Image (cartoon, rainbow, N blue to C red; front, side, top):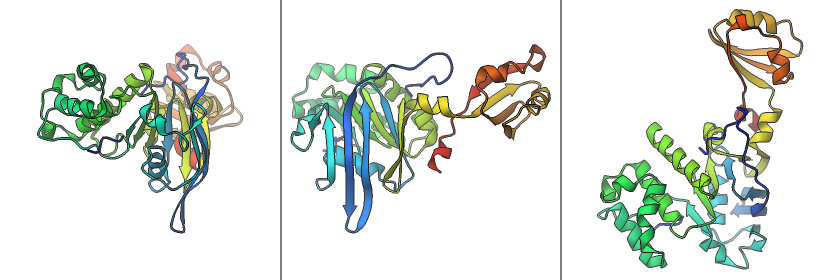
Length: 309
């Protein structure tokens, strides 16, 4: 049975960030070849405890291969992986401390969601009295007695996460968890991931969808052609970005005032919004505007797509 396995990051809005100190998982110089084709090239990074780390990259960048290595589904590879300092090569006990959703989860379609979890609980010696709580954590408690064959794809993905947290793991690895979902399914999946992180789970997810990283993650790594090209926190990336979105009912007035400033470029313009690139900080920008400008908001804009260049 294939049961292998948004914190909404309120960036630059005065809400602050969760303080994350220690590393839970360390990936060290992981490389992988398939024949002569190099799929991963000395990839190294750390997953801070309590974080949501996003592995971002286009299809073919090595994301899924890396996830499969971490999950123990690929046996031959170079490098090392540590869970709180212990190598997973020397001790596979980490599998009991991690949950995985790496491939499409498989279920007994003729059974209900609750019955599927009960079956798995018996196989893994997990407490049976956790079933209702698990389904509630993935927002499936109202569908506990529904046959899985009647589930949408998104509901099945969330049931797969329930399977992955059956043993109450310290960390969850989710490979493209929103892949193939409709917009409603994506919202539900993001809510599930965010709630699990708020409940104390460290989460590592891979995705090729840029907005998922901004909406969900506290940390990001970017893979390109098997190599690591960025490893940073979303907080640092927001601090260092020079792009701003400015919204106003009086864009012409805003635009005229900005045109007087040095080292500032208007990148995009609509009736009620300007996107600018400026090395001025927020307070330096704000002092140029008055009440008559009808300024709604000015927020830093993180364009992760730029980080691929």
